[in-house]
Length: 462
Image (cartoon, rainbow, N blue to C red):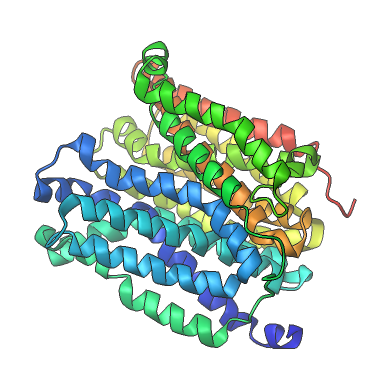
């Protein structure tokens, strides 16, 4: 089987990368059509935003459980099924215009999230374990590029589809992935090696799985309600404190369930393993860092007095340099390990963010803004995705690799959920460009926290 894997590495990588591309595009692809869908169904923005919120909530909540199932039942099987689930969810989302209405669209988005919750961590785990160690970092780097670029381009693709087919035909955004999903499913059955299964092991941790899903859903639901510009009011709002309080109340029950489970969905010993704890904490700060990209268009439009909706092109300055840096960083990881790479990446990112805050914001012009963003992208490309995936894989066994990657993916998702409210509050602390300067310094502070944590990380090889 090992020889078969090595002889088909390119095909295996192509199948998983296509799955990652599809899953990554639909993170942002739906955003541009939200207002169109709201108008079509006659609903307000407060209701319409749930076509995005419900996806992110269930995506994060289901990742660890699906990761555990993949480790138990085989990654190829779960990846193939998840591609089918994602395809089914997309079909339901498209059909909602004719039957079922907005309710069916939300159901379809939940099903899409369940599919994506298996595609991304399973693909990363299989790439990380299938490829030989001397090529693991490079392969994970390529995977990180695909995820990063697809996330950035998702909104662009969504806008292009609506422009091409017309606003009345917004279901095409969902139908578009169907043929690609079917091709990936056929290729997965044909090309992917059958990873080991453990059908005879202890029963699935159903109690822990249910409690964990509920905990994550309630935690993220409460976090989404936080408003750091009016923190006291938001915390005392029942829509915020009730889910947070219930989430905290579930923790003792979850801990008890995991202690009793023969094969827990979340390994509590991770919390006693210093390298793994550092990896999870760094993943959180990287999630905070990556989500700051959503504010780049707004920053560019305000700083350069550009028309609303045109600042998105400046995201390309980050995307291009990160696209180049990520696979190179992965290749370097294979030679020197993840620690030097992520330290250098964070240092470059901090330098770029300080340049933007102290130089570009002092006298904004297209050249200094693009240059600063390019530096940030270079550092981001070196630090996102591949290093933390590599770190978690080298600290866990292959039999739990998918659930381990799913864990840090969840932690990263918590960062992407919490950070926007913090960044918006920082913008509100200043007038005009001073607010954006504060936001950039805040992003730099998150990077600095990750950098300091990495100083204490030691590879098992060391």
